[in-house]
Structure formats: C-alpha cells, structure tokens
Image (tube, rainbow, N blue to C red; front, side, top):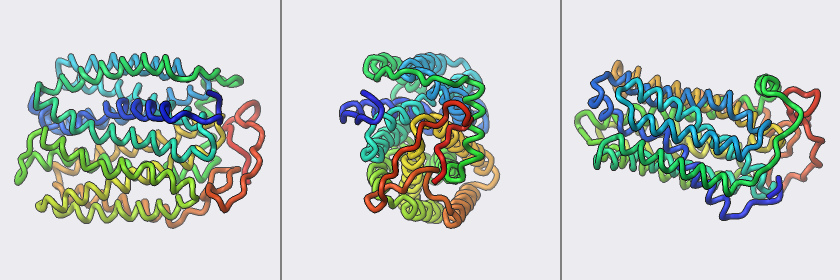
Length: 421
C-alpha cells in the first residue's frame, strides 16, 4: 500500500477493531470505580484518579510520542507502544494497592495514544474521496470500544473481580501488537527533521492555524462533557434511589451505541461539505442532553440524556478529525498531536470536575457544569470565521479541487503547514 492509493475494506475493519481494543483500556475503570473504592478502602477522589491520570497520560503520549509518527517508521512505533501497553495492563492486573493501579493505568494512557498514529496513517493511505468514510469507520470501531468497555468491565467484575478485566485486556493487546506488525504496511520514515524540532513545530502549527485551534477547543469541550458525565454517573447510579451493581452500571455503556452509530454518517457529512452546520446542531444536542439529565430521579430522562450527549460528543469528534486530516500528509501526526492533546486535556478536566463537584454539589452541580460547557462550545461555533484547513478547499462536490502545493514541513518551515489560500 502506498500513500493515497486507497485502502482495502478488510484492512479498514482490522484497524477499526484495533482502535476499539486499544481505546477500551481507558474506559474499563469507569463502572468499576465504586468497587475499586471498596476494594482498596480509599476515597472516591483517589479512585477517580484512575480516570483522570489515565487521560493525562494519554495527553502526555500525544505530546511526546505521537509526533514521532512524522519522523519514524510507523509500523514499528505502533507495535512497540502496544507491547508496552500490554505490560502496563499486566501490571494493573497485579496492582497491590490503589496507587500502583493508578500508576499502571497512567502508563496505559501514555501508550494507548498509539491510536492517534494509527488513524492518520490510515487517512494517509486512503484516497482523498474516501477519507471521510474511512475515518468514520475507524471512529465507529473506536466508539464501540468505548461503548463495550464499560459493559464488559462490569460483567467481568461481577464474574471474577476487577483483576480479570485488566488481565484479559493485557492478553488482547499483546495479540494485537503481533497482528498489526504482520499486517501494517512498512512505510519509510520521513527524512529531514529531528525530535526537538518536531516537538517545537507542533506549537508553531497551533499558533499559525486558527482553524486547528478552533477544532482543538471544540474537541476539548466535547470530551470534557463526556468525561464529566461518565465519571460522575457510576456514583449517582450506585447511590439511592438506584443502588445499582457494577454490572448494572456497566450496561449503561450500551447506550453509547447511538454515538457509535453516528460516526459513519458524520464522516459522510464531511465528505459532502456539511461539517460546519452539522457541528452546530450536535453542539446544541449536547446542551439539550444536560437539561434532560437534570431529571436524575426519572430513569427515562437519564437514559435519554446519555443517548443525546453521546451522539453530540462523538459526532463533533468525528467531524473534527475528518476535517483536520485535510492538512497535508507530512504534518498529520503533528496536527493529530495538537488536536488530541487538547481533547484529552479537556477529558481530564471533565473527570476532575466530576470528582470535585459530585461530592460537594451532587448531580445538579455536575449538570450545571455540563450545561455551561455546552454554551461555551456553541459560542465558539457561532463566532467561527475560518472553516477549512489552510490551503484546502471545502470538501464536497460544489468546490473544485485545487492542485496540491509542494510538500511542506521539510526544510525552512518549522510547522510544516500548507500555504494559505
């Protein structure tokens, strides 16, 4: 396979499965939080760090490891990161205490950022006209991983305890590392840069690209809302009037199917040039979801709120990713680093907000914070002026395709950004 030559459906499905298995490791802990609290005899704030520091670890991986995808051979880099990921999951399985588990899950977050080398690699292999659909398929796999992670974790915890969850994940990731090493194309490393210059160029890229900065902000707000909900929700469902077990709480993850199912349609909207309008509608859906979730004593309203929020958050994220891959292939790993770093820092902030607000202000405080985030997102969307990456025409049939500019990011341009239109 060569860049831009197209990618077979079977390979896309394998990579979608890989995205789902890798990302699931970041979400197993959420339905287990009440059980982990009881198992280790610590506060909800301490076990909540399993989620918060895992997300910060992912953000660290995005900053320090993902840019290497523009410098090193990506097949070897991805499989090496997955091998370390499997070891970290094995350490989580054997963790003797809460802090050992938190440390292991932080490392799981760091190495799990391999997803964000895998996705731009796939976008690079895809033909221009299939990129939105391909990214949508990978995001469907990723979202199904998020969805099933909570359900599987709750079921395995009920069966044999939380250690079985991480032991199973370690075996799956080890097998995946071997499979991807055999199946991924061995594209050559990009010449002409160094690691310090590569890291510095990410900052230059963010400073020079208002379109990218706006995507970063919207992504951070969306994932903050997502983590705010899913970190606080297990505690609310474990309390009265529900008193649910970890297995029952895990079943709520199935509601995320709505978010997973919207991934491919969102990718097609990008291909048709409707991404901006769709983003506004999805941000509005996030705002509505928090109003529904205020009715926490009515299970139907809670379920409806979860459904609507997952559709909104995941739809915005898919559109953001499909749009930022309009930047040149030579800088896509760094664009991904910038966007996903903001995304997961937003998620860490949302998780931290949840473990702070829920003990102090209860569920209404959580919903008020979520509503405020949605309002900020809508304000950013409404004031956006730059709607395409620099040097790119809007996607979709009405816009003629411009000739591609000479490769940037090699030589004098530290950011490697495409020239402006």
